[in-house]
Structure formats: C-alpha cells, structure tokens
Length: 341
Ligand SMILES: NCCCNCCCCCS
Ligand SMILES: [Zn+2]
Image (cartoon, rainbow, N blue to C red; front, side):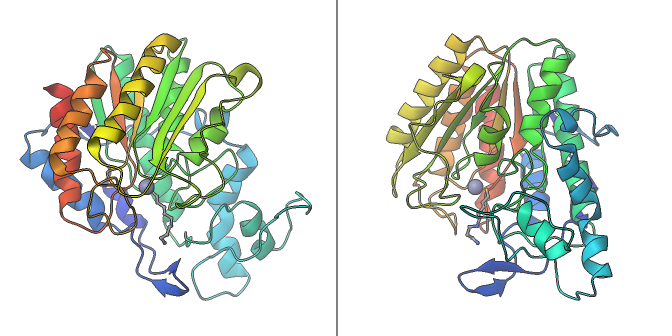
C-alpha cells in the first residue's frame, strides 16, 4: 500500500466556518491529516511518499478552466477589495437568475460556491493543488501496475463540481484521479464515494459521461448536506445514462443496511466494466462523527475495505471527510487493513 502525503496541506488553515449561524473553528482542520498519517503509519502502512509535481492538465479535463483560474486568484482579489476577513460567499445565482460571472469578487465567489461553509484563505489554493497532486500520484502508482494506494488528500474534493467549491472542497481529487487513469489507458473506471455526504461534485463531473461510473452511499439529502443532489432517481444523462447510482440512507443507518448498499454498488461497478476503483474515502459514517448521522463502528471499516477489495480491482483511496474524533485515524487505517487483508 503506497501512501501519498504532502506537508503542504497545512497551508489550508482557515480560522472560520459558517456553521449554525456562527463563525466556528472549521471542522476540516490540519490536525485531521496529522492524526490520520500517524494512525496509518502506526498500523504498518509506512511506505509514505510526497506527491509528484503534477500540473493542471488533468484537472482541466474535469473542471472548468475559468473556475481553476478563479481558485488561483480569489484570495488576492478578496484582499485587493479591502476585505480583512476570510473569503466567504454570501450571494448565489439561485433559481431564475443570471449565470454571468460578476466582475465584483463578492459576486464571483458566490457564482462559484455551492455552500457558504467553506472560507477561502491565503494558502487554500496551494493546499488544494498539493492535495490534487497526492491523488494524481496515487493514480500513477496504480497505472504502473500496483494494486493499492492511499492518497491522504487534504483539503478533500468530492463536493467540488465542474465549476463549484464548497463542503470544504476545491478541486475534485478523486475525479481528477479517475481522469488520470483514463488518460493512462483505462477505458472505464469507477468512483465509489463512501463518505457520509453525497459526492455531489463527483456526480456533477461525470453525469453526462459513460466512461466513469459514479456511485455514492450517503445520508439522505432531504436531511443531510449537500441537500440538493444525491437522490436515488439521479441515474446519469446522455452518454452517462445508467453510469450514476445514489444510495441515500436515513439517520442511524447501521453496517448491515449500509453494507447491503455497498454490495449492490460493487456489483454494478463490476458489471460496468470498471478497470479500477477510486474510493472517495470519507470516514464520517462513523457512529461518533460530529456532523453526520450513520452508525458504523471502527471494526466496520475493516469490513468495508475487505468488501471493496473483493471486487478484485486496483483501488486508489482518496481521503475525504471524517471529523472531530481521534478514531478518524483508526478508521482510515482499518479501511486500508481491510483492503490488504
Ligand atoms: N458546518 C457543518 C454543516 C455541513 N457543512 C458541510 C459538510 C461537508 C462535509 C464534507 S465531507
Ligand atoms: Zn463528508
């Protein structure tokens, strides 16, 4: 199991998150990557490397290049506008409005945001680039014929759409990795999102494409972020018809219900003909996660890894969510243990 990790994740260290009507210390904070790194090393996954210095060529195939330019410049534009706080979107192009991108930075950040929970700060972009590079380096490890890799991505990526940031995400690491695998010769790949929250960004990237199967197991969007995508009737469009599968589940969902959805997703991934699986690995399905409502135990994460490995395909796991409790490290290590069991 190759682990890819970059110290540059520390450049993403926002001080505010709009949560429950207050500006709180962000749930998605630097300690997360440190705890997870320590735990996977402790579990024996010590083959840890820094990412290669990939550019934006692959990312530009799944994200709007103008959006990537926005990410690269938003902080400087925010400061140039004279604002002293962190960059937070507060006006959005909602129903029956123009999709023109305003020149004003407050309008522009709202155009590109799908949630107001993600403050942009100095260094956020550089950290997102490093995170993307971890995923791309993991894809290359698989492309070289290896079976498993874990990209310790921070910031996460699965809520980042074609031209959207939010849910603590900026660049869709697992989506970029899937594209890399295709560019290296795969005909079909799958992105399996096991994070508690629906992979709305990943679904957006590939919804009209037939070469990437996207599956997501998540809290029912009627009750859970991201609220506005993730229903079971979203099955892809055009060339992507039948290549998207959502498994929304209710509060309190335990392993036996959750794993039945995983089993179904894996059957569909195999039937699709995927040559590799990119796992959007969030561990916020854990019973004590502070912002989620499923009931998986730490041992369930071993079972999760074993089930995914049973598909018999190469697997790249890209770190997504999992918050607040020390068990996030154990739970990630347990998935890796299950993969290699
Ligand atoms: N402020 C907490 C409420 C929800 N905010 C978005 C959660 C994104 C999870 C990404 S895995
Ligand atoms: Zn999540």
